[in-house]
Amino acid sequence: MEQLTQLSKAHHTIEEVLEHIDLALQTLSSAKSYGMWDIFLNSIFFSGLKRDKIKVANHEIQAIEPLLRELQQELTDVTIDLPAEISDTFWGHFLDIWVDNPFTDLRVQREIKKTVTALETLRYNMQQLLEQINDKIAHY
Figure 1 (spheres, rainbow, N blue to C red):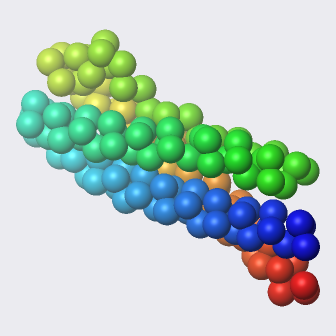
Figure 2: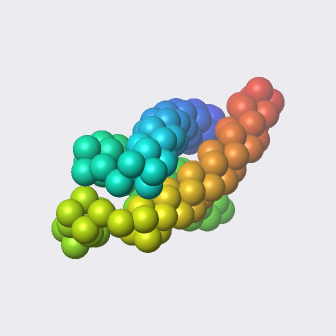
Figure 3: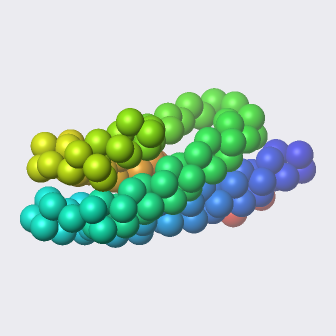
């Protein structure tokens, strides 16, 4: 019975992780679009919008970390890596907005793409784990 309780908690935690991943991916998609406009128009306006979206995506990624730790405690044999955040330091922000140039914009676009790929991989792994948990719950 205790294992069923742990599996149910793990199921709920994975659903929360998936919600944060989906929000981060949606936000990064917007950031990527604003980034393309920023590259072609070299606009402080689009740089600011892009940075706002990056900040929101980083917040979602940060929200995933404690959930993954909780999940690892519930399922002790699971090892999960968290995607890296996109640099949102003062210096990076300053360079991207005030020293706006295509090189900085392209670097940020590469970071966004790398983070999206990592989040998609994490999402896939969470879906696989969720299916395994659902199978185990169904056998109780």
